Picture 1 (cartoon, rainbow over the protein chains, first blue to last red):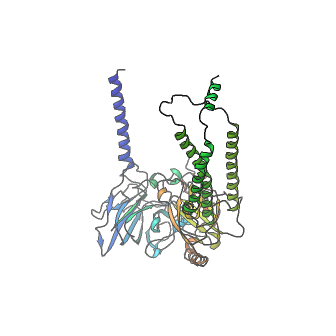
Picture 2 (picture 1 turned 45 degrees about the vertical axis):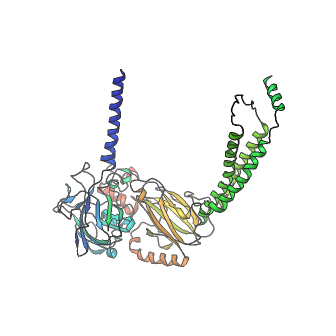
Picture 3 (picture 1 turned 135 degrees about the horizontal axis):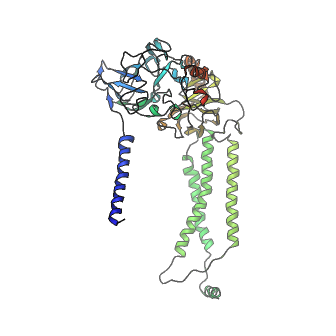
Length: 232
Length: 314
């Protein structure tokens, strides 16, 4: 092989390696879902936030992963993101529509409602557990009632979302799920702290069959974990 | 012949100074000064501090090893510096150095001193482990060294990505708050519900791996009140870096008050927890395995707790 041919080969190989590294860094390591901004949607000093938890999604490369969606306060569209920008020291009223079935908690301690106003939540719909207001504990071991949790460990927030019955008809097969599919509805409120990034996650090991249940969706921002980006 | 000439030349030249004495004279004050600085100036600030018996012992151990290591390091550096200055090549000097052969006295001294240091450290290390009941490290499920009396038992449960704490002597309540009484021996029972974590209570000098289905026991006694930082010290996944919390060492009265209040406050969730045990098998509690089997579902462990719980798995 001539010197020129060798030089060209080396150059092409170098460009290929650098290009691959660039692709991995930009499209995989640094890839993040969009930040959904709630800072401009105050109503009487409060922010209403609507989210849903779906067993499937049709908007990613992993349609069989469980996933959160959040409703854009600007457009009303469901957005596949778990990074939510919230105003500091503000009451956030959360409504979650849960379309997934249950998976018992690995630690039933996370079946308690904590860090919300009054340490309670309100549940309605076809839940495999308790229904009503003022709910402070869901026992996932006896009813298998918890589908996912919304937990912000640094803020002490933990809300177990009751799942729909396994035997329920008309379960969601397409995400974001339409309200015609069987679901439960959970509402709760919490007060945001000062500015900062606070990670949140689900404590149900819902990345089943992957890294002890906490892989896949559980370990990917945009699915079952993300940030509360609290700003002043 | 050459050696004889060399000897003759040396004998004819100026008398060699006592290099050993010179090196020793330089080394001794430096070593004493370094040890004094390490012990009295640097030592009190060495990690992990002196908030507990195990932390204070670790600080003491590091000081002792520093005091032993500094003279050795200085001996090497002083000798190297002295050699570079004294026996450096001078202008016009192109002669080979004299051949050097074995020196029994030096070899014996070297072997004796290094053996004595290593053996002393071995004895010292063993004593420090025994007298401090494991020096704050996890001793496994059957600790060899146990404290006298009845320690406060705190179970540390690691989970991706959170530590929680159970207090079996107070009704088995579980909480995210680590609260300890000052002056009382504490027994940490450390375990995990999923992967390997490591419970590292920095100021207490306690560090014990949290392994699933293993009870890892560590002891310590907090000697003053204050804050504790707890971190996971075993890379455990996406939020490993965020797996930290803060605890408190408070007076005995304050601890008892907190424990009683928390026991009452947590009563509702405590009733739903599995009975206190040294290890937990999440799929076995409350008949979950049976539930899974009947429902034909994969288990909460994602295959981790054995294929018998996953009828749908190959």
